[in-house]
Length: 630
Image 1 (cartoon, rainbow, N blue to C red):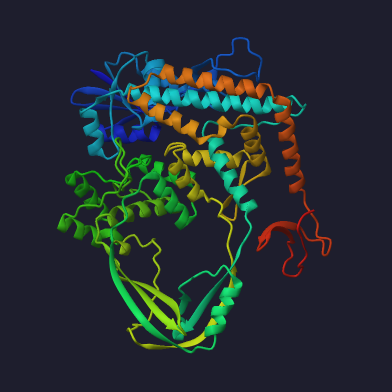
Image 2: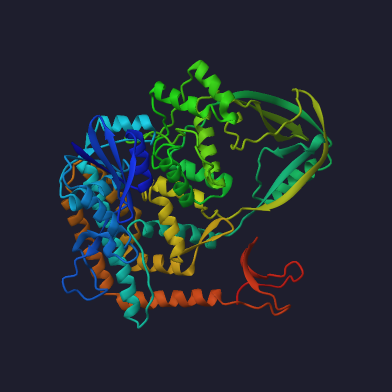
């Protein structure tokens, strides 16, 4: 009896082959595969290399660049430019699938994995059904269990995957062509693109940019009393919006050198361990701690998974498996790493249970380490492995205990407050020490005590504009707004940067003039394209397709009808849209021209000060030349 297992990538094929028995490495046209003898059966373990099939326009004599187009077909990905290497994998799978009794799909257990596996099964092997191995890590035990207890292919996932790809193609290709044809209508040419999720994502970045540009700072005043030891007491009002009122209070108490403690309130609080990582939280923490981009973090975590060191990373879950035997086995493995040993020994001795986060994923548990690295990791790989390991172990540990103190002072008849905070017991923070908690020790004040005041300070301050999104905070915002999936959010941000719509400036994401032009033009002439509601509605329908509550054909037909109406409106206004885009692009070009400082010959660069944006000399502080605009 001969069986074929189709994996998603060559490294995974190797791991699965080795888990099932003594794997003999072979190759066809330079593509490796593995042959295993198990219980008298011959098992061939081969792989795809990601998606082997892609969507292409079924042109039907259509002229290049015309839109709208909704006739698409799945074709071998090697037909497309830059994917020629796929051909030998397709040919290898076709050859190996001859004369096999059963075909097992062992691709990643998610929408994309189900689609990759089914396309290989259907288009290459000529079969409509096969067995499905489902696993969340590449440990030997889990692979054997998945092989011996196969499931069926989830056609809801397949249909949802095909629908998602088709919808993305409909919107990405058609709207991008509409923008380029609008430029062509005014005798200009430039490659432009947008997409079903990229448009709304860029739109809310533009909203934040406009909020910053429109922001006008507002003055306010604070009154502080400086106590001995550098302790600050702030007036209970915190912010005075009226200067006269602030000065009146200040003049009343400016010479006071004593205060009386009215009330001391102490409270202890237990802080539970942080839950294990889902992908979004891992990406945010890796950026906060190591400044690794979300895309890079996702790629590193995927490599660790393929090496068999951590569980599947593209998960929404913040919960570890309930199976203690499984967890115990993993803990015994990572006990070999010296820096974790003491924690693991106590967890095992007390049979501790990990905390559970709010988020769940029906397919995969939270990201956790599953084995000790057998070979040296890259510096970045080591950082991500350690981050995951500490978050995993921390989930089993004690609560952190903190003390918070609030002190009320009377200074010349005015109420002031002093606050302090300290950690009484680190608990889980001893393991996951990356969390920032404020340690603000203050004296042991007693009610009725008279304290010395060194001086009273009146300080003028200004409100600050909203902050731009960072590579970390935008992932959280996309998740909050229901835009994209856990697997695609990092890629969406990368595309916006790559296309010149957004730049990263000192860690912040700033929309370029081109990005502003695209969104403002789309909002004016076809606002539905960038509305979050439409994208969220599609995501909800895709989930229904996945649950087999809605037919794939119905959601695609609805999207086509909606998009035809939008594009018809765009076609009627191509010249206006083209002119608007050109105007904004020329502004962008003018803004990016090098400007010379008339005083010293330095370069003028955009800056932001108390009163908004201005241009200052790059030779500051030697040259203090500034100008509001050119």
